[in-house]
Amino acid sequence: MKRPLQNDRPAMYRHETIVLSEDRVKLRAVLLVLLGIIAAASFAYGVNALFTAEPGICEITALTGEMNSGDDFTFYYSLGSGEVSATDEERAVRSLYTQAATDAFQIFSADMEFEGCGNLWYLNQSINEPVAVEPALYNALALLENSGGRYHYLAPVYELYFSLFQSESDQEAFHFDPYRNEDLRRFYQEAADFANDPGAVDVELLGDDTVCLRVSEEYLAFAEKNGVTRFVELFWMENAFAADYMAAALMEGGYTRGVLISEDGFIRSLGDAQGVEYALTFTHREENVVSNLASLRFSGMISMVYLRDYPVDNGGSSNYYVYKDGTIRCPYVDPRDGLDRSAIPELAVYSESLSCAELTVLAAPLYIAESFDSELLENLTEAGVLAYYQADGKLCVTGG
Image (cartoon, rainbow, N blue to C red; front, side, top):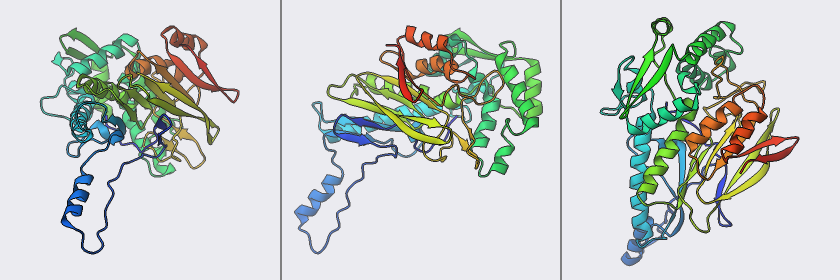
């Protein structure tokens, strides 16, 4: 489901040159104020400059029009390294990025119908019958099913968490918060019990991009009674799959000198561009105080997933709700009981070979837990994944 987010993405920058702060950095056209009479030639030059891209790092935004995943991402690209002009390259990259962002939004959407698109909405409307879905969605479902996790079956719970995050007061939030509303907590537990039971809900992979969402009669009765209309949803994982989809489309088009950064911590570079370095500002929450702990530097082809149980923009992100007493609700929901939790305040995982989605399914059981499991941490090491976390006031790293 599309989640409108404010900009709380990690800081990223080009080595020694471009600094991308926590706030979205936007390239703005310079407005020339014409005082007096300007020669026609000078005026023509000024107009031309507004539509001419310069070589170097540039933020590429998706064209306006249809809803797309670009709203959740910042895309930086290094222009002018090829044979074509920077202006022509920018135009081509923007066009491809817009199409990829539009496709990603439509494919992974669980709450919107798009004509001719076998997306999550379509799957949720096709209970207990084989249907063809988009190849990217089929691959996403295959990854989730093979991981053994049940996070994507928490759709009824995710809907309530989304409402919780949209609350404008603590009184309103109470009506969606299972920690503070005991009656609601029973619903969360029932929904989680169904989500955890493959006999109640399961996606059967039939090959050739065909799947069957199987839902038991008991779960369907529960859904009808409680107004549940969706059984499968990506929620906080959606941008991991969107990042991978857009990166693949751009690289297939020959564009490999950029990086995609989602507002909720999914980072994907497009290739091994020479002379480009990325950095992540690793923050740490100690009770209600968030501070910068370290700056991590990377280069080459990378995927990163940076999970935090707190917003970094003073509570403004729609992926969280912050109570007046400082209590925070986050989107990382445990399939065991439908409650949000995190083993530690923040965790960053990084790989040069795995995708964002692959990192996400590996990190989720480690992060969404009551305690930090050293055995699961070792599993990441064996998979060649670097994990960054805080312990005793210091940044710890394992794996690689």
